[in-house]
Image (cartoon, rainbow, N blue to C red):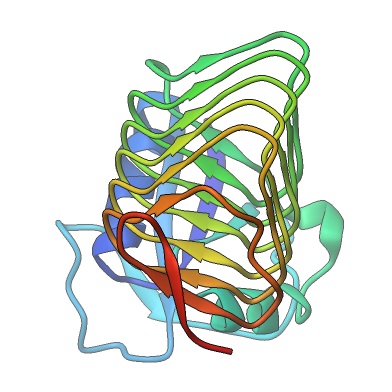
Length: 198
């Protein structure tokens, strides 16, 4: 049986463990807090060395923490997890360390970067591009040809219409409807989406 270490013993990590078990991995967690208990899985102290006989994935939703941890290990130790009931076009590319959860749909010619999170029920239509460390929350809809820059966070239930460009380190609040491009560093809320901070 393949062995997988999930870094971060949290609720997000437990969802990833469920996917990993469905994909026939044996699972354990690394965390800095050994007092955590996570559904009977073993939690060990996180080390800064590559494991010899296990793959890695980071089970932490915070983009900046996920990025920081990813740089402490060799790139080739990370795998991606794709839930068996996700629907993914054969023409889609998914980077290493990313997770695609149950009910996600990714259509033709989309590109998903490294260490991204596509959460439950998200829809990524054709020709979208997500750069690295992007977090797409549950039930987000990205229409065709949407691009999202590094380390951006898209809140639950957001809709982004076609041909929109979202910069890096953007935060989009839950339920927003995005009809215009968003510059890097902005926080956007509402329907239609309005920048409240930059």
